[in-house]
Image (cartoon, rainbow, N blue to C red; front, top):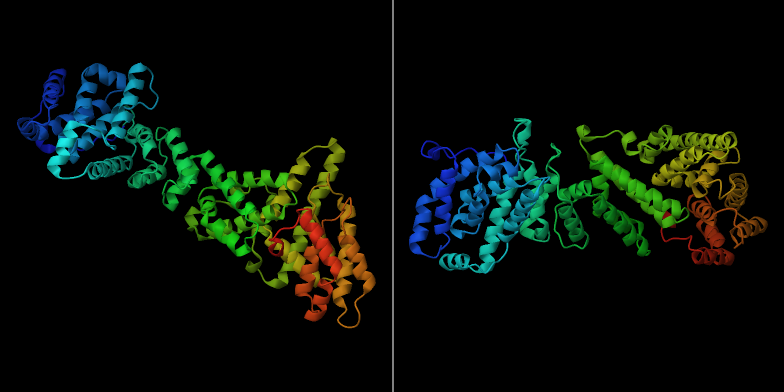
Length: 557
């Protein structure tokens, strides 16, 4: 219900207290005013308009003091008929003050939870009135008024709609009345009525300010709920680009509507995964433009839902590099938006990553650029040993509990966090180029874990043996700065890359190592080119494409 407006001072002493007799007087008046085309009636309306406003102000106070719509209708039996006739009188509704008071009366009569047929019928009528006032109708009085005003029907109804939007927007911006008077019907109940009235207006540009105000209204009261029909209609219109909303209104829509948020995340995934020709920069721009990273930074609940969707999809496609790259890009954009927030708006990182191993949270979320390069190796060695302990605890738990999934969950969450923070994976591959036999172990283990996180599908020990073999071959190939290439090493590496029925090691891991050795080693460019131009490399590459484990985004992973 709308909060009571300050009474019109000039009316306070001249109008008697509200009673049935006064209602009967004004009802007879509005019945006579039904023939608004008569000059005498129009003159009578003008003469009585100020007194009518005083009566409507009293009526607003009376409705607000009732405990329910049923009680209000019983105290004034002709209330519905009186308001209905006034709402269809264009000479009354054309006046701003009269229109505002009529709206307040209707908001006051709207029941958030109708308990009987009278209240349900009143709700339907209120919705009809609000929608009717914003649309064109073949009404003789309206046509007469438009004729005298010299405006077209479109212009008239557009002005009416704008006035209605302004009045509604002013009303929903008021504070909750129940905070000051617990016995008074809460003014927040009008929020539900207003949102339901906006259902047919979600694609109307003139209603955008009102829709934005509804979405962004602080949730200070449980009665300030938005209509599900309104949220569904707005979500559908926005996804189909039929609704024009400001950025903050879109964020608020996702905050209020889970289905709208899920639709936005899935739409982002679909648009990027179907367009495999996008460059990393284009993907980054597309993700940022989606507003989802900004929404996630502002609302922890939005980030948790988004992460759950990513987590679910990644479980179904563990080796899909496009999905991994999208998650990494999204997380980077999210962290950037989080850094832009004011200190008082910050939420603990633990709230955003409640399922992640807390010991790994800050180390992985710290960007490489935030520490000296000399510290990278030590930092990654610590991360690698921490993840290894989790996998060892997983295996011990399996032996002790007969296959409990608790350890699997912790290991998976560590891997998911590593996927989100993929920049450290790239640094790991880069550092492996300059590593020696004495210190490459922890880094290679972490890179192998990234490509093969699940023990039940891949045998970590066997994978690590093959990964070490691949690193040794590459290390020897790119360590020789002059003379002929070590043919035996080249052949052994090509064998690891060749198509096999049961591939123990991800070809993408070997390919990633190869590219990083070619880029970051001290080998001459001509010599690196000669290695990369070996025909059998390209045979293996074609096989990767056919197996759909290669993506245009591999170079940025």
